[in-house]
Structures are given as structure tokens and as C-alpha cells.
Length: 76
Image (tube, rainbow, N blue to C red; front, side, top):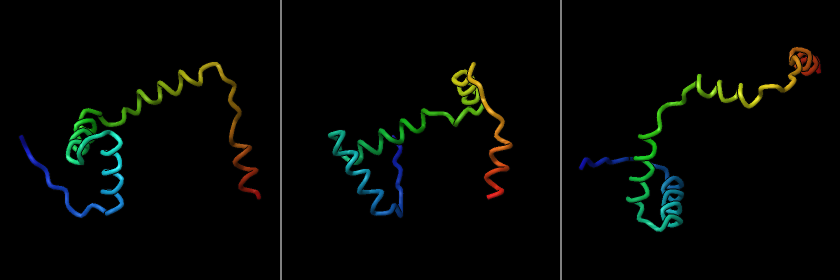
């Protein structure tokens, strides 16, 4: 299996990762392996799928034109 070395992590990052590992009852190495494996499975954000999901969630709702609200806010 391949090995990876990550250098120059901030101490706060390492502390948070150790706390996360402890909460999951596993070693820091096992936690990091899980984080990296999960991250590699997730594809990049699909903008079209996200836009479609938002459109479905907002379907049927009445929306006001925000132009007037923005103009009022800028006039302050």
C-alpha cells in the first residue's frame, strides 16, 4: 500500500484530528485514512445538480424582485 507524508500541519489542525479520532475510538492514522478515503470518493461539486436541487426545493414559492431591496440598502 502507498504511504503519504503530510508536512507543516498547524498544531490546532492536529489537535482537532486527534480529538476526532478519539471520538471515533480509533488511532490518528486510522482517522486520517478514513478522512482521505471518504474525500477521494466524493466527486467535485456538481453545479448543475445543485442548481436543480435548489430549483426543486423552491418550486411553487413566490419570490420578490430583489432589485428594489438592493437599491434601498445601497441608498442608506
